[in-house]
Image (tube, rainbow, N blue to C red; front, side):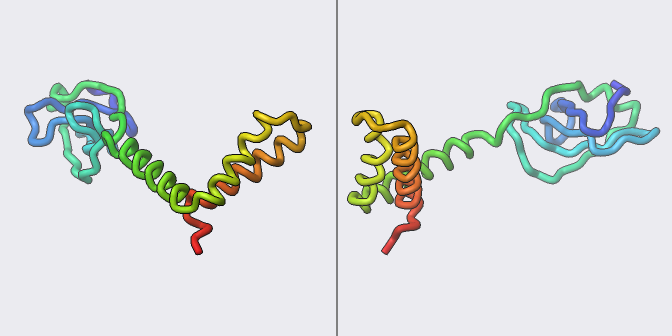
Length: 137
């Protein structure tokens, strides 16, 4: 593989100390410099490790797609954020209930469209303020 340019992603085989996905960060006439950005399973890693390949050693790399995510990190953050939001709503049932009623009232009671939009917006804002903990007393 000799047609690499900066930004390309390659998979380095187990022949190296740290197999995985690398991004090309430098190319010159003698070889390429690679930054380690993913493990062998395709998950993103942040090691800061760089390796240098000379042109004749480029048989150890093959072109690949960039790594995906860092694993369960985003799902874990979303879970704990939703849990904290729910706990804040439960700790302040009166304003949370009022916000919920305002959000869902236009679905239950026939109100003019502009009024329903305002009620929904005010209710959503109240729920966001309560759930984020901004209305603590």
